[in-house]
Length: 296
Image (cartoon, rainbow, N blue to C red; front, side, top):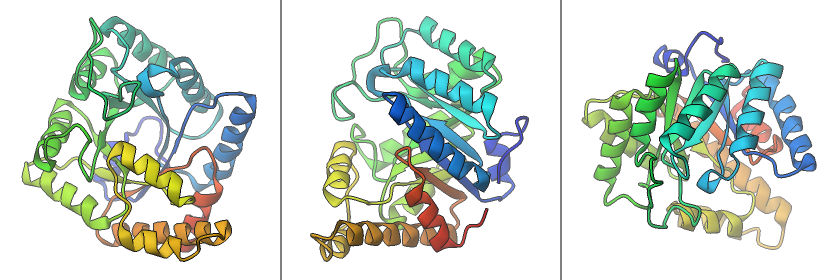
């Protein structure tokens, strides 16, 4: 269910309504931008709770992210959630970006520490005059404007976390700083998601946590991405997809089936909704919706 511009994502989730949301990344050229808007047009009739636009590593897509997010706010019925990271920005620059989002009518924000330009496993190097933690950015955004704020969560732990418990402590700190909801990194085992929720609830925090879904359309590609961000592809999933090796269409179909089964397990187990990493295309998400019998 879509939210009204005066209603927050946190409020909707607190009422027990299922959320369906989509994530896009800033396109690199005109062809990519055309593809992005085709995906947005195809998914808009499903009235997602929100759509988000990512921020490139090291803040590399700042201008495009701000522009695309503002355009979604101005030209569609969708509720945009703007990503913002601490990487490469001073506090003053972050305040300027927040002001730009506010002027564009963007009310929701994903506040992230962000990854260094060399990837999530690279050592964190603070920007002089900048912020070190996502919780600091949450506090800054709340003080700067009337933003409703989401943050990242990691079912298998962030690559830099010392333990799953320490990782849960970080998410709890972001919630206590003022975050209203969280969206997880991609994962492939429902039990990892539910274990994360239990760790957070055990710490006395009831922030809604939306599971992030990335359908496996190419096994080697998803393995590489998983190694980078610390997400393991289960052996059972590898076996299912490897059984169709040499037939890309069959591999893709099996990947969609795996994702749909994960989604069904998550919803049945009490997840408040699903957040889809679309890769700026609509087909895979719509196929999963069909399997789940989600209607326009």
